[in-house]
Amino acid sequence: QKEVEQDPGPLSVPEGAIVSLNCTYSNSAFQYFMWYRQYSRKGPELLMYTYSSGNKEDGRFTAQVDKSSKYISLFIRDSQPSDSATYLCAFYSGYSTLTFGKGTMLLVSP
Amino acid sequence: DARVTQTPRHKVTEMGQEVTMRCQPILGHNTVFWYRQTMMQGLELLAYFRNRAPLDDSGMPKDRFSAEMPDATLATLKIQPSEPRDSAVYFCASGLEPGARAFFGQGTRLTVV
Image (cartoon, rainbow over all chains, first blue to last red):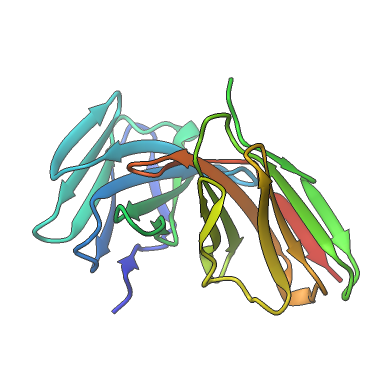
């Protein structure tokens, strides 16, 4: 079983749609949960950061963590063409290093 | 605006040559990561430093790769000798623990021919 599973996509949606991106993980030691956004030919940028189970909202973005199911999600409301990018989930256990998913490519068409 | 700075941004070199990539982490950050990104493998950790001490370099091919932090403002990644399979984008990231919220540089795009 891989430590992190993330569907590579691409996920294509029309502008204004609600987008749901997901990752599953197997390492119970993960305590910190992050989402990064990466535009083509750019470095990943930190989008959302959570520590515990539950929801965290920031503008159009909501990060959700379910530790019991080992499942995290990122929701994007009112998606825009500028949201077109690759979204990577990332995990940190507190004593090791960041572990990334392979990323999901999102395409938002006008 | 604090950011991680990587040089060079692009590098084309011939097989067998030495390649050195440099990273200036964000001032005050105590963790530095080196990652390699390819389409097939995604982001792979090569090295991890905390307070300039190497903590994890298990993902790095030891026979040809080396990573150092000569001081708090500079991290280096060297490949000697380089091979075509090393062609990838190499990212440096820095962060503050706990939580290791990492901030990435723009990457060095390496092509070995």
